[in-house]
Amino acid sequence: MPYDPSAFPPFAVTVDLVVLTVRRHSLCALTVRRGEPPFQGRWALPGGFVRADEDLAQAAARELWEETGLRVHDPSVPAQDNGAHLEQLATYGDPKRDPRMRVVSVAHLALAPDLPAPRPGGDASNARWAPVEELLQQGGYGRDGEPVAPLAFDHAQILADGVERARSKIEYSSLATAFCPPEFTVGELRRVYEAVWGVALDPRNFHRKVTGTPGFLVPTGGTTTRQGGRPAQLFRAGGATLLNPPMLRPEV
Amino acid sequence: MPYDPSAFPPFAVTVDLVVLTVRRHSLCALTVRRGEPPFQGRWALPGGFVRADEDLAQAAARELWEETGLRVHDPSVPAQDNGAHLEQLATYGDPKRDPRMRVVSVAHLALAPDLPAPRPGGDASNARWAPVEELLQQGGYGRDGEPVAPLAFDHAQILADGVERARSKIEYSSLATAFCPPEFTVGELRRVYEAVWGVALDPRNFHRKVTGTPGFLVPTGGTTTRQGGRPAQLFRAGGATLLNPPMLRPEV
DNA sequence: AGTGCTTATCGTCAGGAAGACGACTATGAT
DNA sequence: ATCATAGTCGTCTTCCTGACGATAAGCACT
Image 1 (cartoon, each protein chain N blue to C red):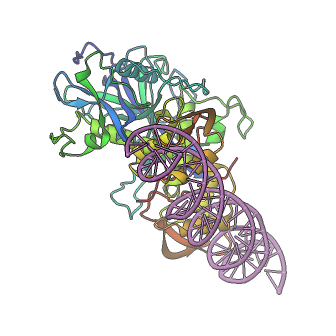
Image 2 (cartoon, each protein chain N blue to C red):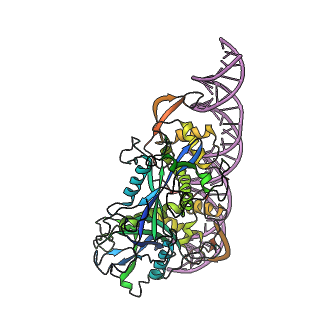
Image 3 (cartoon, rainbow over the protein chains, first blue to last red):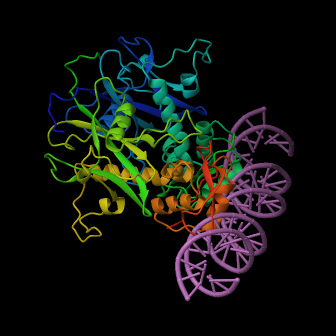
């Protein structure tokens, strides 16, 4: 069938971002408050239109930069941590997902170390890190007792998919290091796993596992005591991206 | 920023399909021959425009039906094999991926049992199953000595991504059964793994592994001898979708 | 019937990985 | 000095896997 320009319906294409980080031992996602209808005043995932000359990954990287100031990690420079991890997540195209028009959203997943503060174009009240646990509960109440309004559009589903992707990906890849600063301790890495999975891990077995996996961690020689207690060795992320055998998520 | 209808560029949105099956011990993908430029006469993945009132998954299921006659397996009817497996793969939106206009393609992955023949809208010469090995080699020669023309557009990349998804997913899920008829033997399932991974597996260890994983296989009571040799028990796919522990792909 | 070939299925054994957990070390706080 | 907090090293048991021997049950011949 030939491509007749009048034969296909026009779509708007956007990118939405699931930006995850670990703050205070819990997995948090970046949300922005909507200024206009629909869903005015509700929290939503950051995102925006893909421009006419822009690749999807470029658009996602641009949105991430605009919302957080984060640059995207370039895998061609493996030894240096020069930004966040960004990958395509999934695409959402229900005809009714936006009441105004037909919008197809290509969601992306970004993993970032704990950031000083969101950068909502200067207005801090319009962007915040929220624990995914709060964002995803239906009709519950947040820690401040306020009723939790669900995310705008289908963003709760997108967030849930992004969280699930992150949870499974740190199992068999070294992606958990994307949540850590350039240098980190085994304990800090363990707390990432604990926050993302929502479980407690045995520090001794975890230490044995990660230090015994070739290419996962590279000691930098330094030590730190920022967590209190005995000073811990500092590591960088090694070149390995696939963990074999994988980290094991404890059974339910 | 408000949604100004003139503020976003219009896109065409298509679905492309990576339909995989196992034929004669090798992993094959469905390809269709292009009738018009660009890439006229070249092989491409089946696909088409998403309609105005259609969800992405609906569009993919419709294309699959139109190209193969396959219905999509409905997970709400787990005990019965009522069609192929279909899932979203990834979205491709390079501004130059189609020379005519801006097209964003939401690729889907379908896994199907060996089919009698493609159903190319009635014209068999315009659709065929081709071994992915041939389709993905760059500038090589097929088994008939003919030079292999690469797939149209970015379809080689899409196919490669789909194959990689299938290869990794049968590791930790029961998806390999989607390549099998409703009733199958352990040996037939093993040949699926061998074809998809391109390796040889030990029949004894494989048998122990799959029959020892709870919920993976359900014996139907029957036996068959269609493979020659000693009659083998027949099984259906069990309710389990996640394999824990996973099947292990042999090391390189 | 017997031989050989093929595939299926069961069993055994050694090596490795993981969970449970004891013990020791090195800091800061009181 | 003592305690609390983390980090690190070992040990032991259990389970899983890979390698591979052995047997079973069909079919195609002779």
